[in-house]
Structures are given as structure tokens and as C-alpha cells.
Length: 387
Image (cartoon, rainbow, N blue to C red; front, side, top):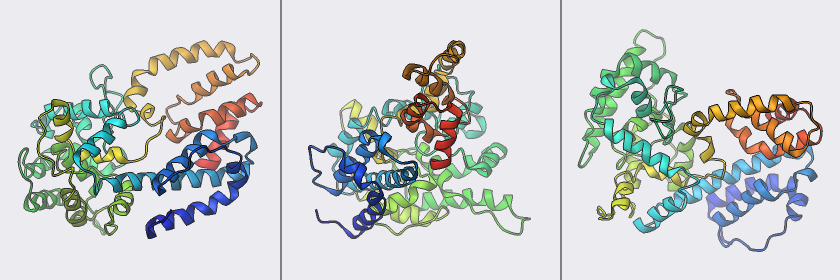
């Protein structure tokens, strides 16, 4: 199949690791052939995740497998976001509907519905949990009977420590910045520029007496903007900036480039057919349309384990996990059948400090435990390879 220059770069990078796994990949029976580069990436990623015989892999091949999967996942995200450049509204909305289960669309809509209810309340007057929901930081205080969603959907800000410190100390300053963004109607560059000026001043004033000034971070700002106007702004994480740029064929910008965010990313989005769609009459479609910009996030790769990583689900099911742990403790001395190994591994994976990527390695860990390794040993091996 013909490849673009960008696709060819991805393909060549993938080949470096496919070569190391070629014999293992050749052992997988394929009944259908992909007709596009995106389809090829999706098919190969699925093979790597579900169909490779892990028993035939040598430990030295695991890093190559991990790197290949990372390349394919990025390529799938780029390919799917690229679709939005030409997708009319029916295709755009249908894709999100089709991804509903994988992308936790119900949770996402619940989050946006909650934000809509509190949007006119100043940050300075919000309940602490509501303020964290608005800015995208999960807390154990988010009672799952009230917050029936993960507040970190659409660009978590949990790593933005200075942002959290300042929004805690100076919420009124952030309210003043956000006041320049109208809650309804058109948003102009002047509106955006006024927001950026005041937002940046908050960080500049914090570092007035320091040798090196602290640049205002773009990603948390886009979270604030997207929650205020989810029909107008895309919420970014630093990790997704490069993927957006590749997908939309715009010059890569850095994590503090506010002008490129507006002129390249937002203005490109505003030229897309799906964004220009007139307001639909159907109530379900209308809800999605009112949040159409922020939902571009659902075009990034997601697999069957993605939705289960929701902080809401983890918090909701925590007592259940605790019950399983107490029940399992009396069975530790039994022979490690597959059922026993599954129980032990599932207990270990509920640890608070367990990296999220480890959940996708559950089956591999179970196999090693069945083969005689301790759970700690198996997890340590995975950490060494994929950490």
C-alpha cells in the first residue's frame, strides 16, 4: 500500500522491532489483510497484544515487543485523529459512539454534565472536590456515589504541581482569567489572548524574585478552557501535543506555546466539517455537539483495559478488592493453579503504587506465577522490562 512520508517513518521505525519478533509473528495465522496503513497498525497491535504466543518469546525479546507496541499505539492515535480533518459530523459522532465502551463515553458525559452544573460558580467558591473535578485531579474524597465518573478524563493535570499550588492559593486570579472566555457564543482570539495574559501573570508573579522565571504551562490552561467551553477548546496533555501535531500536519509546538495552540490547533479544528456542523435537533446528538471539541480526545487509541483504569471504578470497587484480599490470604499455601495465580496477581495489582501499565500485563504475570515464580518476582521482572 502507498505510504505518506510520515507513515513511512513510522513503518521504518516499526520494522526495527518487527525483525526481532519475525519468527513469533509468522506463527500467528492471519485470515484478513489490512487495506490501509491505519488498518495494518491496528491489526498488528492486536496481534502483539492478544495473539502472540508469549511462551515462545525469549526474555530478551520483551523490550522489542514493548517498543513495537508503543510505536503502533502512537500510529493508531495519529491515524484516527487524522480522520477528523476530513470527517463530516455523522462520521465524527458515529466514531465516538462506536468507541463508547472503550473510551468510557458515559463517564465522560457524566463529568461534563457535572461541570456544566458548576461552571458558573467561581473556583474560589467551589467545593474542594468540585474544584478538583474542574481542573482534572482525582482525590480519594471523590465519593463514587456522587462523582460517578473519573474527573481526570480529558487531560489529567495531576502532575502539574505548581498549577495546583497556585490554583489553591489564588483561585480568584484564575477566575479573573477565565472571565474573559464567554460562556456562550463566539470566542475570538482577543478573548483567548486576554485569558492567556492573566493566566501567565499568575505564574510570572509567583517567580518574580527567582533567577529563572516559571513559564506558564499550556496543558493545564487547556483543561480550564475546555471545561469552560468544551465546544471550543481541546484539552491537551504534554504527551499528546506531538501526536496532535503529526495527525493534523501542523508544526510541532512545545508545552508553553499558547499562540500555536490557538493559531495551529484550534484554528485547524475550526476548519473541520464536523466542528462547523449546525446545531442538531436530536437530544443525544446535541449533547455531543455541545462538547464536540473536547471529544477529539476519544480519537486516541484505547483498548479493552483502558476504561477499567478509571479512578472512579477503582474507588468504587475498592471495598470489593479488600474483600478478595482477605479471602485470598487463607489460600496462599495452596498449589498455584491458574485460579490461585489469578487471585494472587489481582490482589497485587490493586496496590496503590502499582503503575497503570502493569494492568495490561496481567496475563503474562499470571503465566509466570503458574510456572512457579512468586508474584513479587514476576511483577519486578515486568517493572525491569517495561518500567
